[in-house]
Image 1: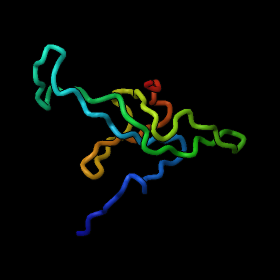
Image 2 (image 1 turned 180 degrees about the vertical axis):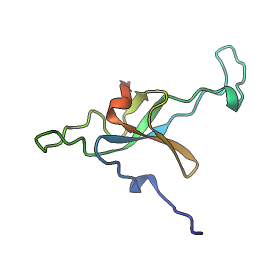
Image 3 (image 1 turned 90 degrees about the vertical axis):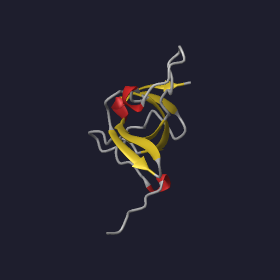
Amino acid sequence: MAALTINVSTVNPLGDRVFVKVSASEEKTAGGILLPDTAKEKPQVGEVAAVGPGRVKDDGSRAPMDVKVGDKVLYSKYAGTDIKLGGEDYVLLTEKDILAAVI
């Protein structure tokens, strides 16, 4: 069976979808205790890797996206579809699942 190789540059989200590279989760607590993989929380911050063209409004025009490639964003904890590409973790979200831009 042939393996499918996908690069981030070939991922093109549709509609109001956003492709986000997940930031690494914390390895230890503020007190210095190392966390095992089973105790780590799912990260909620990432960097936008690709954005779709925007959702189609009722009149047929496209609504502009609020985020762009390179923005750091905070997103809902259990939102989106987790994807692993080339050893990196990504999540594919809808724009409404993004809660805030991180400055």
